[in-house]
Length: 312
Image (cartoon, rainbow, N blue to C red):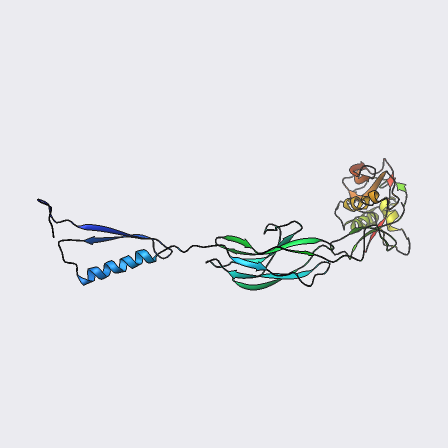
């Protein structure tokens, strides 16, 4: 043992720094060279050395997974799923599939969840559009992020119906996502009239697809007892090709009907057609079939064309 001349014996200070999920601290160890190292001191240093080297941070990765094949495909449904083969070192908190009509879909597109953890899972897809190509990937999420499986492409079945087809007393001009239901327009106009002969608020303000029939009933129920004729009444009282459930289409239904014009179907006039969608006491929506533009027009200052439609 050596001493510095004129100095007191010194103490060696060691710092053992331990990082990791289980420990994160600085451990001070004092060794006095003037004292003999006892067995307990050596044992303590050994334990601290093991702690320092053993508390290493575990690296977390995103999960690993594969996408299952798509099976039992119909017009509007399909079955699929995936297998999470590794959680990446952290719990998988969500898993499922995502899909869309463009390549490499993510969880910001359509998604369907099925549990958590690793292993194989299945998903049933519903409300798919008929005759449509979809891109699909399985996904799994842990604390590190979201991982995606391989991409799978599939196409739903076609419909028995088609736009422009003669069916149900007229011409099909709209099909919903199922391909089994839609809208039919009469094959000729029902006249050229005022929206109504007098200005009354009817409350028939809905514009979406599927609202024209309710609009028509509201208009007829209010105006007919008052002796006020309307375009909606003409459609409501129409009996054509064995059907009597015709109505004046809503704003968006008229827009769908306009899609027959580029196909040279329906014999439409290059003029304006009324919708059943009211905008105010004096005005209602109509559409110019020459330009394909909507107009909010006065109900009883101009006469426009009427084309009845029905649902199937």
